[in-house]
Amino acid sequence: MSKLDQNRMPIQQALLEFQSQRVVPFDVPGHKHGRGNPELTQFLGERCMELDVNSMKPLDNLCHPVSVIKEAEELAADAFGAAHAFFMVNGTTSSVQAMVMSAAGQGDKIILPRNVHRSVINALILCGAIPVYVNPEMDHRLGISLGMTLSAVEKAMREHPEAKAVLVNNPTYYGICSNLKAITELAHKNGMLVLADEAHGTHLYFGENLPICAMKAGADMASVSMHKSGGSLTQSSFLLLGDNVNEGYVRQIINLTQTTSGSYLLLSSLDISRKKLATEGKQIFRQVLDMAEYAREEINQIGDYYAYSRELINGDTVFDFDATKLSVNTLELGLAGIEVYDILRDEYDIQVEFGDLGNILAYLSVGDRRRDLERLVSALAEIRRNYKRDKTGMLRAEYITPIVAVPPQRAFYSEKESLLLPQSTGRICSEFVMCYPPGIPILAPGELITKEILEYIEYAKEKGCFLTGPEDLELTRLNVIKEG
Image 1 (cartoon, rainbow, N blue to C red):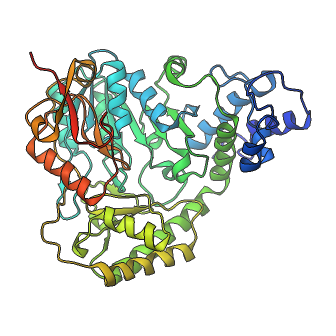
Image 2: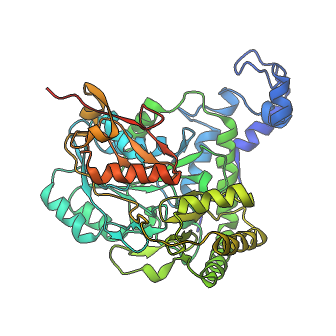
Image 3: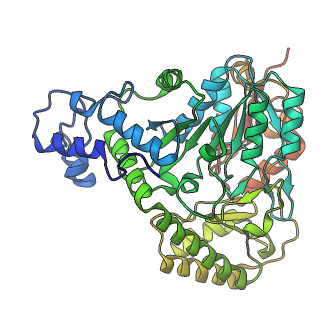
């Protein structure tokens, strides 16, 4: 039971009071409640521009909260079952980076799966920590990476007892969950912190019959992308702490990189969305789950598509599955997921979250409607009728196990040279290459470039994947560590 009044929205209340006072602004932002930029005001609306304000005494300060933001943090911590919650306005990327940088420093080791979001490896570049990768197993039928096995995590801990932390995806983009509770118990027994990337797991805190959330599993820190399934504005997020983490130190780490001009539009959206989930979350996510189950059933009746769910659970590499995720495999159709993604958008005006080489993901959350799902189902049926082809020659893998030759920070900052893709085989990469979304690197700084990886990149380019990360935006060249 909540100890605080979850109907309160202190940031929203403070903003409304501020607006009613009709204060004359001789501070930033320079648009002065929208008057200085009529075009922008017309585009975004007067209310939005009037509430786009700077930190001041009545509105508190995100870097050092003592009043309304502090109360909002306490309400969020209470709602999520955490010891503390930080409001993050630089995206969940900043939450993940603060989490990693709080746990590990220069030369420290951190155990993690390699199918992490690029923000994790970015954090290693910033702080100089060394990754110990637990390479996830693959589901070769679906072409997706699975969770970390408990035995593989245990082996990594045995071989690297000095590691400071273990990072776990909970869940992956596709809905796959590792055994977070058992990993947490094992880590704590070995004196290591547990960090959970819950970018895709906001709803786990409020729904029923869903995988365990990080705070309930006893994790030490969790990055929660409130804007994904929680309904807040894009770029807004929470960083949650457990009982054994020094809140003051984590705030110092956050303040190294987070803006000193926190957007009150983002802050209030977190405050209002937290209230909605705390008071109505069970009912909301029951409906989301019902819609996902309905859509899965309908899609699986079309033929050739496979909308997968809890039947994948095996107690190990798939310890649990987030059934709100509408992940659909397209390979039997003879089409890559990215091809189905493009057809849905270009011909049916339907925007799904992403398409990779074998799957699409339709992201369901608080704002979806059954009639929109019906439209998606009927579009997928038409695509099968009109575009199905021979599946010979289709690549399946979403993930290729990398060979880490050099720590990410050293590789990123090393002297480098630019080579044409075919010439880079056997060299060590000094930049990122990834399909975005989901933003999981195909190559990261410090990894060996192999013939298999280059074939994967060429295939992804040919299929129309949006490849990001390298200095050369056309991706005809790669930066590698200079030899000699």
